[in-house]
Image (cartoon, rainbow, N blue to C red):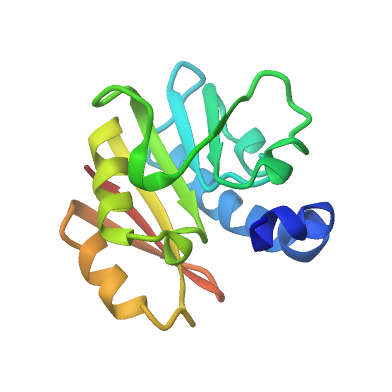
Length: 164
């Protein structure tokens, strides 16, 4: 059982507000720049309990390797998929926007995970990266290989909005 499966019941209490704050920053940026609407397909990679996923408009899919976290999702409109970032079970450019909030540092192979997110995104890839991650510099370098990277600030994570 993974750490996230084992701690699933208390996940929102531990991390919920922090994640919602980042999501609100991202959503405000997307709305301000007219980059999101209710007709878009959204994929949230490392979606956990889907609490953050629910904030975004559109046709939403949540993917997470922790089944116990996904089980907590209460919004029936969000499709929940058990899986990993390194092997996304979706067609190329299937989603308009791919999000991954504070998850990339947990991927077994962050380069492959980022490549997969780029593969399935048609318009934007949004990644938040834990500033205190020991792999911060390596992961940031990989993210910055994408085009048009905008960086938003949050006290805990760096937020990258990129074109795939």
